[in-house]
Length: 409
Image 1 (cartoon, rainbow, N blue to C red):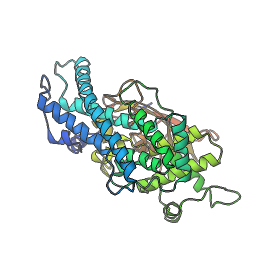
Image 2: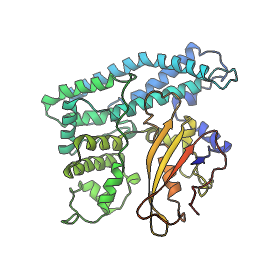
Image 3: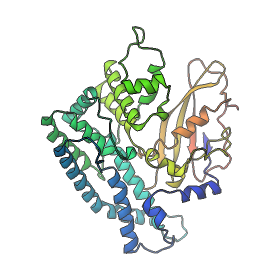
Image 4: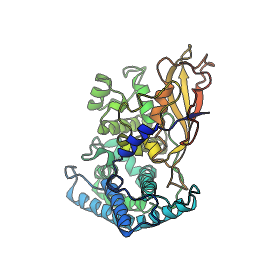
C-alpha cells in the first residue's frame, strides 16, 4: 500500500480560509471553550438549517403544476421542521463524543470541529436519501418516468442542490393519478433520515458514465454497434463537440445518466441494477457541492505527482481518511490506458454506523489523475489482467510516500 500526504501547511491554511459555509466563515469561537454558549448553538443550528434548505427549495422558474408545487413545498417544510428538532441532538452527541475520544490534551472539542462533523453527517443523509429505493410501486413509477419522460432532468436554480427538485420533476412526468402515492413515498423515505438503516447497494463498476462513454466510443450506432439514439443536445455536446463527462452541464450529465438507464434496460440489465446505477450517477456528493471551495483549479500544481497524489483539500478539512483500491488497464508496454477506483473504504468524523457515501468519492479524481499521469509505466502487463494498487489516505501518515511498486515515471 502507498500513503498520500496531507496538504503542506501553506496550502492547508488556504484551504481553511476557503471554507464556504456560512457559520464557519462568519464565526471563530475559541477552541478551548468549555461549552457552547446559547448564541453559538443557535448560530450552528441556523447554518445547518440554511445548508439543508438549499436542497429543499424549489426554484421559482422550475416548471411545475401549481398543485404539485404546493404539495412539494409542504413536504419540504415538514422535513425541515423535523430536522430542526433533530439537529440539536446531533450537535450534543458529537460534542460529547469528541470530548470522550479526544487526543488526551484535556481540551474540549472546538465548536467548529463539532459543526463540521454534524455538517458531514447531514450531507451524508442527503446522499443516502438519493440512493435509497422506495417500495415496489415507487420503484416501478420512477422507472416509468425515467424511461418515457424527456424533460425530467431540466431542473433550474442551484444545480448542486437540486436533490428534491429532481424527484418532484419525475413525479410531474407521471399521470396525475400516480402523484399522491409518489408524494407519500417521498414522505416515507424522508422519515428515514437519522434512523438506523441498511447500507446502500455497492457502487456500480464501471460507473454508469464510464460505461456510457465506452459504448459511444465504439463507433456510430449501426447493426454492429446497436444502441439507443442520444437526445439531440447530448449528441451535439458529446459526439459533435467531443466533451468528456466532466465538461458536461449538470443537466446534460443527468440526461446522459437517463439515456444510459434506458440503454441498460434495452441490453437486459435488471431494473433494480439500472436504477441503482442511475442513482449513483446522479448522486450529489460532498465534492460536487463544496469541493471547489477547498480545491481550486491548479491547487496541486506544486505537488510531486510522480511520487504521490496530493491530499484533496475537502478531505483534509473534513478529516476524511481510508483506503482506495485502483485498477489500471495497461497497453503492451505497461502504460496506463484507463484507471478506475474499484474499492472505497472511507472514514469521516461524524458519520457512524453507515457508509459515508457522500464522501466516498473525494479521492477518486486525484487518484485517477495520479494513476494516469503522462509518462508513467507499470511494468510488463500480465495478459489482460489490470494492474491494481491501494492508496492509504492518512492525515497523520508518512510525509514522503512512494509510487506503487513497479510504477515508473
